[in-house]
Image (cartoon, rainbow, N blue to C red; front, side, top):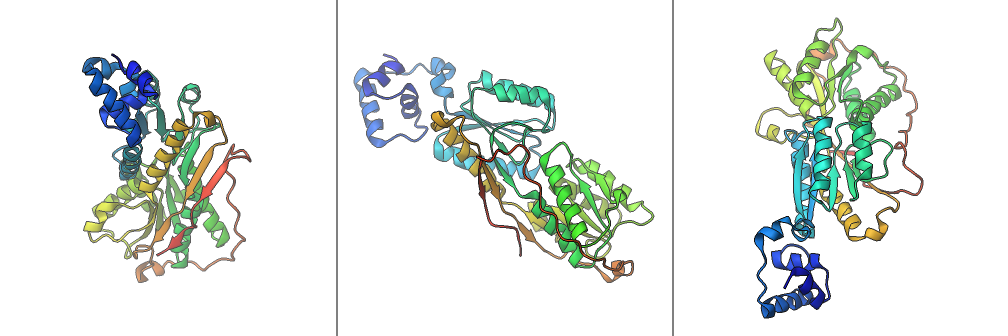
Length: 376
């Protein structure tokens, strides 16, 4: 007696029998009783070694590829994925690329070798032709999170980073700042580009000239952002405020401030992108654009589950979910009397430019948008 024999007698698929035997996954109670009755009557004993090598055991495995698990954002994202995977009966496997496209390709190959049912992915860059080509040939559904792969047709869960960055910079402007720098992320990624765009739009609307020396690369990394901050503070006319492109960037900036005895709200102002949970236990009150990270992971896993369970719709119109964010103001955006001494006069506002549409998003795509960003 084999799993296939049991499946035939019970009138179900072998994967359903596997879920019953492993108590893993959603199976109707009536179906479970029918399968277990056949197992008991036949005195079936599964071969553990064979089962570990079989499709039945691997059929509910899914992969999550992230670029940097040291980043609290991706750790929280994985928690959301795990919660949804538990609900749907999947076993999520985490792959950390460390922002290395060669590692990413190796994990893409692994996802096929291990016969994963589906893949959730935050790509290192958008336009790596080798990885993108391999990704598009995968015979399993793929869902993108936060970042994209250029010129592909995958489902995805994202945030409105243009809007988020705009409101972060606007908060600084409303507090009197005109000398605002941004430590940017890699422009080979969607978050890196769109957060720069939001910064540019906020300056434009408020009549503040764009200054090239105020835009420095931090690559979403702590040490690079520390060096970027050092470069900004060495300028003849240094900024009075910083917009930090992500949480690791903010950590790099905070490290610089600590080493140089500078305080937020006294010596310099700052708004970051993505919360840093550990700051809740310190006296550092950093204003941030806060995103629902767990929900991003949860929704992405649910999208993947939908593709896995509706194979007839595998090549249908892609679904793209855009989640809102909150601008949480904790005081670090304010201008002190010390900074106000160098304040420049406000300039005439320019009508705001609309955000450009997402590249290569066909008209038939389904877009689900959450509420707009708000300040609290």
